[in-house]
Image (tube, rainbow, N blue to C red):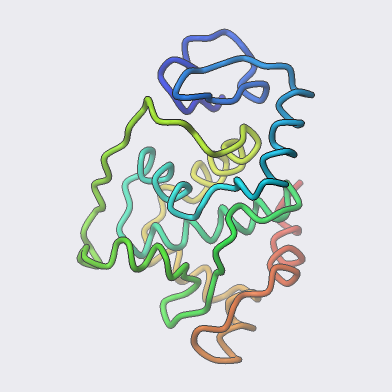
Length: 187
């Protein structure tokens, strides 16, 4: 089960039918939830990569390297399972694997082996949809215990990063290549 706020965890409702509104776990009809998500998408209210990073940091101990790789895997599986980008920022090929520059800039003051300690406000509004939270949580279950170096080695052996890296540092990873590659791992 997936819960984003303490209040939501206390409600006996299927978490796929819930949105967190102003920090309160509010059970809503799934059709209404989908309509809200659709309207938000049209109004360009999609979450930023920093929203996703903060959620990951609230649930998983990460170094800057590990955070970047978990963000990439969340992005990749969201493309496959939901059919759309998890965030609008670009994922680019760097020497150490896929990177989102905005996250690098936000956390570059941390040492590469230092665990990022991010304050998390459980009362804050959650900009992530229930489906996005489900995908992110699934990725964290599978990859969350691996080290940043382990995750980096995995990305270095996978087609999306390899193909972008061959074109040069800073090349944007192609969404279609990401989707085609990671689709094989989803049942």
